[in-house]
Image (cartoon, rainbow, N blue to C red; front, top):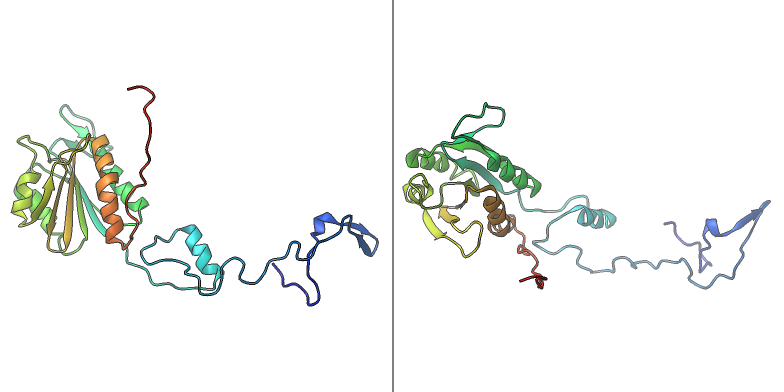
Length: 238
């Protein structure tokens, strides 16, 4: 990475020469500008290093550092609260009882949110009670950008999110999407807070998170390229 001395126009690699006393033997003829890098070869003057809305990962950090940028203005981390609904939920470590299941969705979603760089508040389990659930969600309305829940979105008596949304004074954006699993997802807004309610089925919760919640979170973070890449595939067996 050193500068080329004045009057020289090529570089011979040290590993390509043979030492003979105080001299070296070069076993080939060097060509002008061999092993030579021009100034600006990596990044030319006035080149845009990073575009607005581009996520900064390790390679982007390296580019910024290589050009001497110690600081850069970024969007703040998205603030997200996450909870699961259901009287049947137990925390890992508690004794398993008949009619109960462990609250795996909470940790799936919280872990994925942290992977995405969000500032996560883990609320925990919320009972199948419309008023109580609405009270919990409302308490975060002015503190988070997104309230994410799993469970309570289908058509059963304990699918409370249909009652929670109006109890919050929120505007429902949609209920049910044309996909499987995860069709009964709900999205709503209350003031500046977005709410997304996913299915309680773990696989459905994960699928709808990746297809709906993840792009929304990316947009809230200021990113512009938020959708998953699409690929055309051919089934080997219909």
